[in-house]
Image (tube, rainbow, N blue to C red; front, side, top):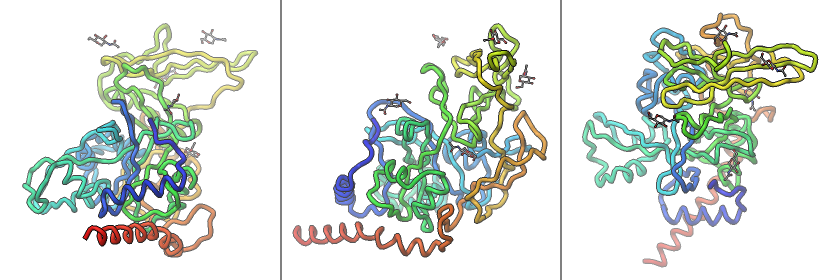
Length: 420
Ligand SMILES: *[C@@H]1O[C@H](CO)[C@@H](O)[C@H](O)[C@H]1NC(C)=O
Ligand SMILES: *[C@@H]1O[C@H](CO)[C@@H](O)[C@H](O)[C@H]1NC(C)=O
Ligand SMILES: *[C@@H]1O[C@H](CO)[C@@H](O)[C@H](O)[C@H]1NC(C)=O
Ligand SMILES: *[C@@H]1O[C@H](CO)[C@@H](O)[C@H](O)[C@H]1NC(C)=O
Ligand SMILES: *[C@@H]1O[C@H](CO)[C@@H](O)[C@H](O)[C@H]1NC(C)=O
């Protein structure tokens, strides 16, 4: 059951008081979603690469498939040896994870980290996992009594945040990104960057004001394409965020979402793996094929669709419908070359129109020569808003941000004085 939203301001304030009194010295907060059953969902972590790392090294920090990491970020996997490509420090990536229900709250399925010389709990939390977890949370999850003694090679459980909220936002399919607030961020800037509204972000995160502070973790809804695979399918519940890809069915299929419609589109992946039949019964069409036939009453559209991965078999369904107009060719989210540098570009507002396909096409996916826009932009102002500097925005927000903390600190001091 998802958090009831919206909360009233009083409720939020009371909740904050309870939260801060329970864990007095916890300074950052994250959005907590209660849950009751064992279901799980796809979710994303907003991760900032802390030093130059290979794609496979980032993937192994989260125990995920490097190809899954690349496609989730719309990075072209047709480059030779792309899994060993070195990613630049400070690159912002969306890391797909499975969000499950542990002890009544949403948590990502456990991630493990093997300690290395010179690691501290703080460096693992703040640097290696870019603030997605705190040193205290790692300490608790591993019952570490003396954090100053970490054995090299020790395997630690790293509890990472996530939310599902029923896979919807305002009744539309959505996947949630757990985002670590940076010192330059404002809520308006985040809303603009992720094409959502302040109200929506505040409702999702049960916030009473637009105040945020560095190291808070926000849940950001991203519009997504939903699948309707049967419950017994291995990839049941697959969701692909707008503008990206997912690889499924043992690397046999790739599914994309956007840019035009938010209908999931799956077709054979261009990876050299052996796959079970992808042909639709009683037809010569394979998954992803669409044929159109102009008729008097409109356009007869027949398509062979992917229906889930069951027991090693690819389920296909053939569907025909009469539509008023014939659909154009399938459009794909633009792919980026594996990034080599982090561009602190000021551009993020008007999304570039789908670029003309000048760089050829591989595996049916048009290649776009566009630069990598997924980097973490510093100091954003809202789209179309006044071009004030980021520090102006901060000075407006900060007194608000500090107010509840100050009040609560005062309460805490008073409490301590009573006790003593
Ligand atoms: C979850 O979403 C489905 C549609 O995707 C809807 O039918 C159902 O009522 C929602 N459940 C809750 C608890 O909001
Ligand atoms: C999906 O992404 C495309 C391109 O980035 C954008 O034009 C479109 O508005 C997005 N759709 C939604 C529902 O956000
Ligand atoms: C079906 O799709 C495959 C690639 O996915 C393509 O090579 C083939 O030409 C398509 N066939 C039809 C009939 O569209
Ligand atoms: C549409 O075309 C398919 C095969 O191409 C055919 O089986 C079906 O009867 C057609 N439907 C209509 C309404 O014409
Ligand atoms: C998958 O295979 C197992 C045994 O191989 C069988 O018992 C089960 O019914 C199959 N599931 C489906 C959905 O076909």
